[in-house]
Structure formats: C-alpha cells, structure tokens
Image 1 (spheres, rainbow, N blue to C red):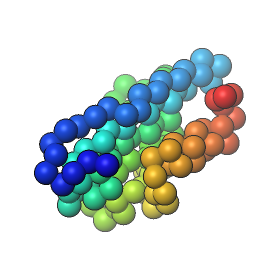
Image 2 (cartoon, rainbow, N blue to C red):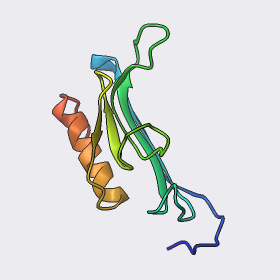
Image 3 (tube, rainbow, N blue to C red):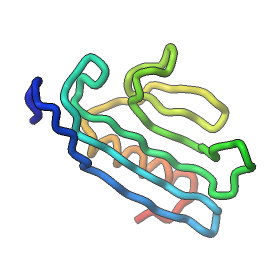
Image 4 (cartoon, helix red, strand yellow):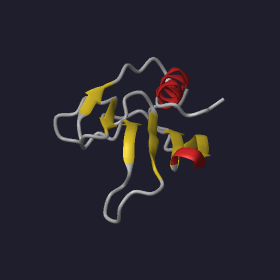
Amino acid sequence: MIAEDDNTVTHVLDVRERFPTNATYAQVSAHRVPRSERYPDGVKYSMQYGRTDAPEGEDGTIVRYDNFPDHPDAPLHHKHTEDGGIERVDFDGLLALYRDFKQEVRDYGEPWG
C-alpha cells in the first residue's frame, strides 16, 4: 500500500494484444499512484479495446475502461462505449477489473487466452 505522502508512481500493468483477424487490439496500462482526491483508490488505469483500421480522426474505441477523473458527469470508475456512452463499472480492485475487461473483449469474439 502506498502511504498518503508517498509521491511514488509505479507501473503495475502493461498488456498489449493484437487480434489481426478482426483488425482489433487490446491495450492495458495501470499505475499505482499516491492516494488523492483524484485517485482515491491509489490506482490510475486505462484498458482499451479498439480497431486498428479506424478512419483518420477517430480513435477506434470499441470499449475503454478508465478512471480519468475529468470526464464531465462520469462516475470515477467507468467505461466508454463505441457509441460514445459512458457507463459505471464496479471496481473491486485492479485484478478483478482487468478480468472483467478481458472477458468483455472475449465477449466480442476475440480469442484472448
């Protein structure tokens, strides 16, 4: 656990998967950060599943989980959907969230072992 006054940031998760059959990818990045008002759980993360062949000017997001605190009206732990929606996600720890994300990618038909 990181102490309140510890300014250490530790990269704890870095996963990249490509699914060439569907021209998609998954990218996960997570950091342990000092607990703060912005990151009360002491973690900052982004888990993106998207298209590698997105048209220019689009990011290709199919689904993205993150806890970036500056999205207006978004819950702290949320996901962005392909249609631009934002939905709350349960956060029972980083590992549990990673498993949920990975399962959602599989639900889209990806062979992510």
